[in-house]
Structures are given as C-alpha cells and as structure tokens.
Length: 184
Image 1 (cartoon, rainbow, N blue to C red):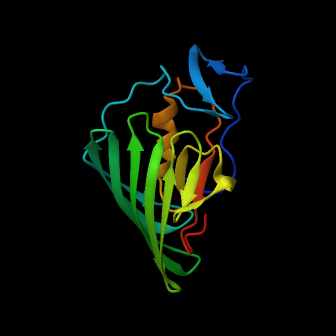
Image 2 (cartoon, helix red, strand yellow; image 1 turned 135 degrees about the horizontal axis):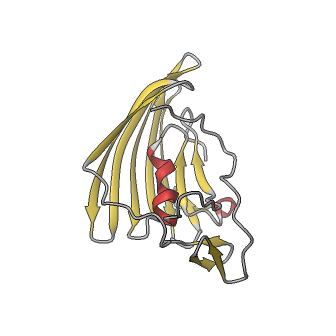
C-alpha cells in the first residue's frame, strides 16, 4: 500500500453550511462552534480488527503496527511506527483514545530519534478544545482528531468519525504531531 506524503495542509473543503448544520450528500452533521461532530449516515464501518500494519513507501522507508482495543466508551489504539527519512531514523509510540463517535479524547505520543526522546500528552474535550501536557492549547481549537505525521492509521480517525458517503468531502482539521521532534 502506498502512503501519501503527509503534510500540515488542511483536508478537502466542506460544502457550504448553514449556521447550525450541514446537509451534504443526504446527511446532516451536528455543528458545535465552528466544527462538525459527525457520525454521519454514509459509509458503514465494521468494528476494527484486533490489529493492522502498514509499510511506508515513497516518502520514507518504515513500518507501522496498531492494536485496537474496544473500551466501554470507545476504542484504545496502541501503536508504533518507525522509519528512516532523509537519513534520519525515528520511532513513534502512541496510545490514542477515541470515544464512540471516533473523536479523539487523548493521545500519548512518544517520539525517539538521535536527538533523544520526548513524550507529549494531548487531551481533547470532544468539542474541539485541547490541552497539551496539561496546558490549554487554543491554537488547536476546532480540531477533533490527532494526526501523527508518521502514522497512516491516524488518517482513518476523521474517516470513521464523519462516515461520509463515497465521494463526499468535509473539513477535518487535526492536531498535527511531527515525527522527529514531537512538535504540535
């Protein structure tokens, strides 16, 4: 499977919205502030498998493995990704908790490289508000997902949360965590 080059660019634009809801391809998303919370009535999903793995291609040489653990209030995703990119090696371990609507409630991310190790804790309130390492993070207001630069799996979080029909698009701003230095 070929992975796209990950970047901080926003995802595809959302069709025009009313002040309180959005009708897109026959579904309505609930709006809270400036973000759409989803769970749409589009593409149905089966429960996640016990585990999944991806090989990085093109942008870097590496591998990712994730384990999905059902919880009463959602899922716990435990994974690691490692790669060599531009001659620099790194590994990122993560534990991401999502609620039943696939909104990220927390992410503990540990990155290791030749510069050392750094762990970051992101906590979301499910409405687009965040804390990083216990401190308010207003620059992430409106984000409902975490997007790890090193991870193919985190690209699936808004896909599950929004459950859009095939061909539909929506904005899905995310708290973007860099692989080499764990900056957000």
